[in-house]
Length: 457
Image (cartoon, rainbow, N blue to C red):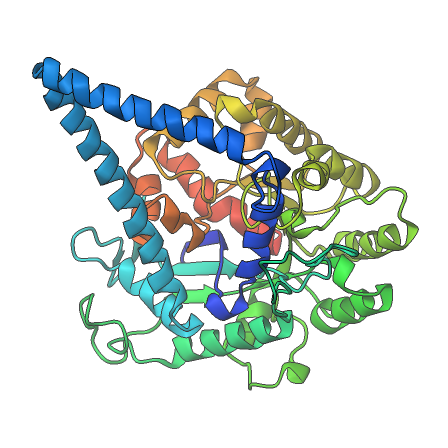
């Protein structure tokens, strides 16, 4: 009988060379109110008022702490709290930067050794211990992101007089593909005590690697012609079987030539609406033809899709466009046309602020047999699991059972380092929570993702 497998169904493996940071920053600036632009006109008035209010408030606080000495302790405590919070935020950003500065092979080694952290070792000599269960194998599914979008510079936009080089650099996804599969090969071939053993205990020579790594291809149909998409699907998924042994047979086989790659190098496809992808572009016949080709092929062959959920993340479109392309209703229309599509709506929300998105997502999970959700980048504290427990207990029993059979564990590493200290800590929170039963944990991190990826084979 094959050993149980632990799955991280949602993480990322790219470095700083693959990101289009300038496009992201440019979008943030474009989204600011026009009155705050430095070449505007009336921006001085609100800034002057705001500055005056801040100075007045600061002066008032200083006077009160002088007149009423007991207030000093509270003010100092508040200042220390704010300073501590800023330090933690800066530390986590720096932590993320350190990870992204690694090559991808070293990143996988770092994650594996992190799980062996001597202070809280989840990965031991006999396997990964999570939620009272032992998992002899670990599957990672890094999700690629197609940063090579075409609308980085809106047509007709006048250049700002204070910007001279505001055309973001190209980020061809082919470079990311080559680096990722080279990293997988290097991870599998690296001796266990190499590279990152300075921080974690060195392992005995010959200790086998524990990760099976099956990436998802990042794809934005807007960046390709219909013929181009057809060629990609034929090249990477033409002989797709969905069987784990076929993917395992390709593991680490990359020889450095992308032309030599074929089926079973990618386990699925990643879609990312905040980069401008419209899941159901009604009114645009050319775009609709491309997504129908994609969904039809995936539905016919059982190719799993993961789509970014929500309006956060790496956003490069304006707010109006973002609201349109991330609307759950888009996926409702997709599934109405392709009800057999295997789809993971990532980053499932449990809080009150996203109640509408949550309810509409749950409707799709209940209605369609192959719709899943994952908890990546959400479960950064015990609060998330308590909210998930309340949701499961509040649903009708049949709906709750369906939801429990569709929840997938994912981390969103390394992006999640902005909210949690380490990969080990994110997995540890899942392992330690008392609000989920051992059977539920096993379903979320093993049974459900195996069904999602390999159809339960």
